[in-house]
Length: 210
Image 1 (cartoon, rainbow, N blue to C red):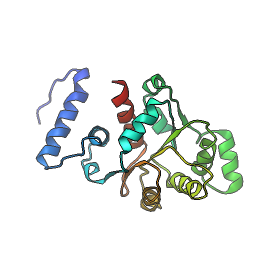
Image 2 (tube, helix red, strand yellow):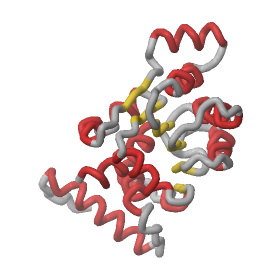
Image 3 (tube, rainbow, N blue to C red):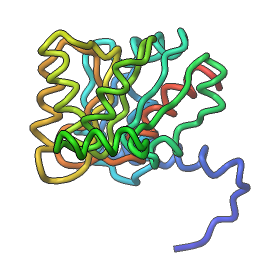
C-alpha cells in the first residue's frame, strides 16, 4: 500500500472519512443521533463490528449530553479510561472525571470484604453528590454492583456506559444493565475495553465543546 503524507491535524478527519466510506460500502446506516459516538468507537478500535453491537437506550445520546452540559461527573473503573478522557473539555462543562480503583481505602475495604476493588469503587462513587455517568470498560463486577444498588433502591446512576471486555460474566453483566430503566450505552457481546469507554465519553464531550 502507498504511504500517504498527511498533516497531523488532518489525520483524524481523514480517518473519519475512511470510516464513513467503509460503512457506506457495507451498506450500514447508523442512526443519526448515535453516529458520531459509534464512529469514534470504530476510530479508536479499527473494528467495524461495533457498528452492529453498540446498543443505546431510548434517547441515550441526548440524555448523556444533557447531563454533561449540566456538569455531571464521570467515574471510570480503570485509570487507563480516566487517562483517555479529555478532562480539560469536560471541565469546561463543569464536570470532573474520577477513578477510585487505586485508592488505599478502596483496596483495604475490598480485601476486608473479599470483593473486587471495582465493587468498592462503585460504592464510593455513589457518595458523589451530583449526577454521575459511569464509564465501565474493564470490570463486569462494577456493572453487577451498580445493578444491585439499582435493584435495592440504594442508588440510581444518572447514566451507564457499559463496555467491559472479556469472557467471565461480561455478557451477563451488560445484559443486566440493559434490563434496567437507567439510560445506557452498552456494547453487546464480549468486546469493549477502557479505550472504548473513554472514546464514548469523548465523543459525547466533543459534541458539546467542539
